[in-house]
Length: 210
Image 1 (cartoon, rainbow, N blue to C red):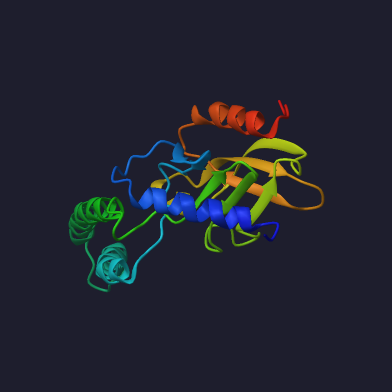
Image 2 (cartoon, one colour):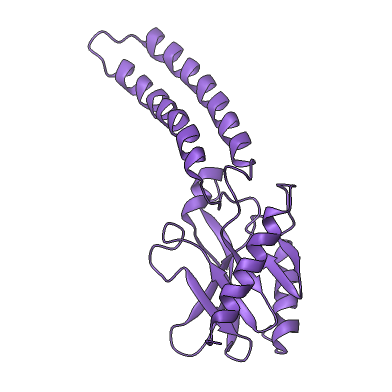
């Protein structure tokens, strides 16, 4: 078996476990069975997208873009009045709220937006599986065995998907190995989960980092 096959196996096991889990409000530390735990970025829009979901969500995004631009067009128009500008802005804000509510309900549908991105805590190590959109400046798929981990840090960094829920800066747990290898795990905006996650990583690695 290749050295990192365990990371792929952990991911597949975790992905299959989440397919069978119907509740969209999963705990941050999810028990996937067979000694595997998943760290889910609960409260952050970090989901996959089926093509059906893309077809369904595209018109909503187009309408929301139009509603954002329409007040600007009206206010800067040659025949603009303050009454037209205020009325248009209010109507557009109300409709934007409605579309955002529909968008939020759609993202709770796991048939359309499956959980594809998360970190795993397995018997052999810790691994992250995200996309380039989530981590444009670093490798989004890294795995470290428990023996490789040299240090553990809690940091607050910018996370692009957090912009969609007004949390652009979120807490990360970062595990470092020799060189520049690092597993970076975005954590739910609910910060009380961090200590429990740190304790679990320390217990599995057999090391104390605090």
